[in-house]
Image (cartoon, rainbow, N blue to C red; front, side):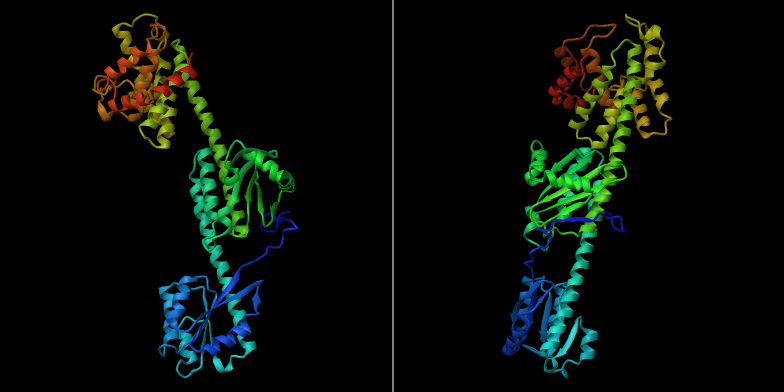
Length: 512
């Protein structure tokens, strides 16, 4: 099942196990003597190597050879004469190939009928060629041997280059996905990076036609999935997988192995936590531009990232639950519904998104806004639960909840709590400087606190409290509009009204 490196072996589908390889090795003959072309053609035309036939190209000058090489950068071997339109035309072409065309993979066999003009020792040292042959000594068997040696070298270099590019793609793709902090974005990034990873720039056929299905499984049941091509539609995605691959997917999960054919590739991985990952490549798989072992490394890294993301998500959700419970406790002490803090959080999130804040900032607004009144926990019941209007002295005590909330949170080692302490301290500050406790104005007030202040007032006025009835919504909207540039930041008021319909839906979803 597993090999010595910890990679999974393959279930080979016998009816498809051998690929029909229609590729060829391209050979260029550059020589100004037609007879040389004829003889070379007779020797090489019947040859094949690694199941690939040879495709011969002919040029009768260095200039013509250069043009062919520009059109065919995947040329494998060049049989090159030295003396053609100039005494050093062949040697000059070598320089152009290596320097101007930046082609280091092409194997160059220099053939000369005038070895005295281009001494072997000088040419080998000063020019980046791979073999040097005297035409008079180049028999059929020696030409055959030279060609096989050159093709083997070219094949190895191409494989090394492909693995290097593949490894670079794996590193780039993995690092890109590791930066994702939500399940949805993780899957969107994962799908995009898999598409980038498998694309072979040297091919113009199969890989672009592949459909891809990616899923994570627990107990052989998919828990998250995404896809492209025939798997693009989320509503029909799993049905298509069952219809086309039902038994094969079951085999991959049961045997914990990959299944690969010419027409599809089911890639399987299981991590230490028991979660299983499947990638189905549907379509001709011959041009997937990455080696299977590199794809295995990529999938292993992604599976680890996914597990970490799930654990991080659990921690974040637990943290949010704790924050909501503490915030609700503070509100319930004053006979206000705990749903107030949730509504404020959801309103604040809408406004933050409308303002174009970053994903992290939107998340921080959503998480810290509920803690704006956490300082009420230290206010006495006689003031907090008083049904009528507060006296001047009582109101001063009530106002102290902002500073008390700040003091409660500011010394935390967690950045989020320190941010929440600022929201608690400043959410009653006014844009014109008439608020409390510090009399801050404008941008001196943290934007999270400015957002929370609008949301807190909107919810307080539009719902019933122990000391007041709920205001009609139109009256609340008129008040917020009237207090623009006074109590409230005008930009945030504009964002509030831009999300008015969504906010009203949230009021219904989270009503008392």
